[in-house]
Image (cartoon, rainbow over all chains, first blue to last red; front, side):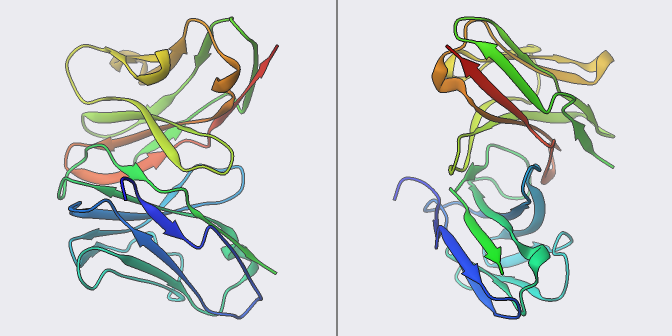
Length: 115
Length: 113
């Protein structure tokens, strides 16, 4: 596709359930980012991949959060034992540049609601 | 530490009127500055960016922004708003070799007929 695609668009999880959120970046984009956007807030950085390497996971809130990009394209953000505070929109972005700032293209996000 | 402040949580403007959204940033080196727009249920779309050079940058949809280093500001403007400009607007800062972006909390723009 032409843009960053995320699935599912909406996810309702019961507290304690594990979830997996998928991101298909723009083909050929080296960099991939995950951001978390709480209600009424701006996006907060979670993690950064350059190809398949996870170079920065400093923004992951806890060890319940795990991200991977095994083949340097599709990425999955996994949240184990979901808590209510995990409810947010999870945004994925990709960029053609490696290790430096340039325009990042964002997907539509996955809205996670933990009940 | 880098941070962005958007002082206005919500702005209401009449269709056809001008719009200015404020953004103040804190960044230890030369900043890269961005404005994104987010419509309901949508992802972020880049309106414009400033990396270097001319401090007045033009973007899509008739928006422009001015970088003022002395004021640590990067305000967004549009001379005449359209109803379709109703959305949430985010200012963000990063650095040349800093892939992370720090976003402000956003400004919601309502356009009245």
